[in-house]
Amino acid sequence: MTRRMLRHRIFVTGEPQVRNIHSDPLHVAAERLGVSEDAPHVVDFWAEGSLEEPGADRTFLVVGTGQPIPDGARWWGTTARTADGLVWHLYELPQT
Image (tube, rainbow, N blue to C red):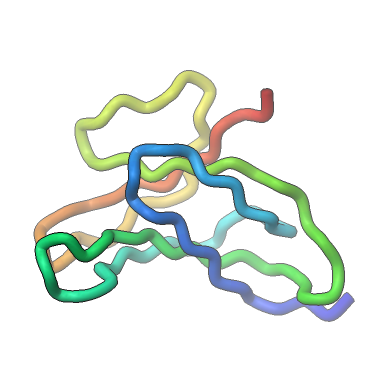
C-alpha cells in the first residue's frame, strides 16, 4: 500500500457525515465554496491513506463555537477563524 496524504471534505450542515479513511485526521481547515451569502461552508481535513485499499467508514460532525457537542464525540481539530469570523470544530461520533 502506498501511503499518501489525502484531503476529506465535510459540509457544515449540522448533520453527521460518513467518510472512508485510513488514519486519524492530522489537520483541519475551513473555506467557503463561493462568494454568495448562500455559499456553503466546508471543513477539510487531511489524513494519511491509500488510493489502492479501502479504509474504514467513520462518522464526523462539524459544530460551531457554542453549539452542543454530542455525548461521546471525539475532537479532532479546530479551524482558524474564517473571513466571515466563524470558527468550526471537527468531531468524530462514536460507532453505534
